[in-house]
Every structure is written in C-alpha cells, then in structure tokens.
Length: 162
Image (cartoon, rainbow, N blue to C red; front, side, top):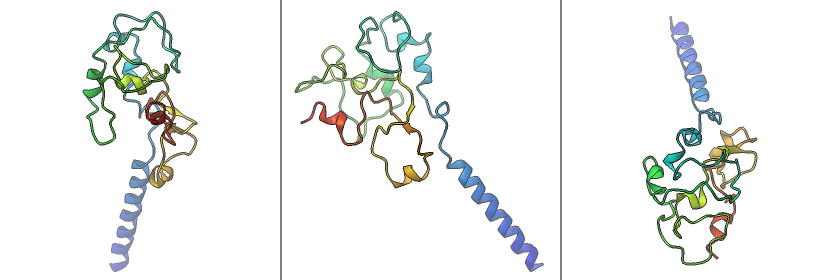
C-alpha cells in the first residue's frame, strides 16, 4: 500500500514537472506577436492617415507617403502602460534625433523608437538578456520589441542621449 502511494506521488510529480516544462517553453513568433493585427492591410488607418501606398518593409526605410497619425501614442497605450522603463512620449526632443528615429510633428512618440512592421523576432539580440531569459530561450531567436535599433549596450538611448 505504501509503495503504491509513493508511485502515485512520483507519477504526479513527474506529470507536474512535464507540465511546468511545457508551460515555460518560449512562444513561437506567431504566438508572441500581439502586434500582428497592426500589419493587417485593413487596419492601416489605426496608425496612418489614410492607406499607405504599398506594403511596409520589415526594416524602416525612411520612405515618405505613409503619414503617421499625430495621436500615434493612443493605440500603443491601450495595451502598454507607462512605467519605470518607458521613455516619455509626445514631447519635443531637447537635442538632435537621428533621421532613422522619426519624429511625428517634431515630437518623440512610440513610433520614434518602435517600428511595428518589423519582425517580432531576430537572430540578433535587441536588448540585454539576463540569466532567466537565456535559460528559456532557444538561443537562435530573440525578441526585437520592434525597436528600430538594437539596444544591447544602450545604442538606442545613446543615439539621442550622449
């Protein structure tokens, strides 16, 4: 009777361990991309003034013609809340901002640093990773957080902040 109880406990523990391992697996790019709807050709006007002339590229090219709404922060803040790691938006920059980090009406917005048309994952690291993210990562793909530049060593921040 005692051995049967131990077997059930061991089996339950193993099943729980398998469940944990499956639950902690990194999501695939499709599952981890809550922004996929923003790349829907029928949802362009969520962020743009009218329909852009063509499909967006995976990398920001600086092309004109896909004018961004002046209230571009609004769709972002429906889901994203400002916190300790958020850069202030809808403000005028105090210094030079490189052309690949576009301003909207001369203001810093979410779209200044983030480009939702780019892939959600990359073989290149975009932000510093800690021990836990390394443990649960496949090692071959990294979230981009839709950053226009990598920021592993503060490159994004240093573009404007010396």
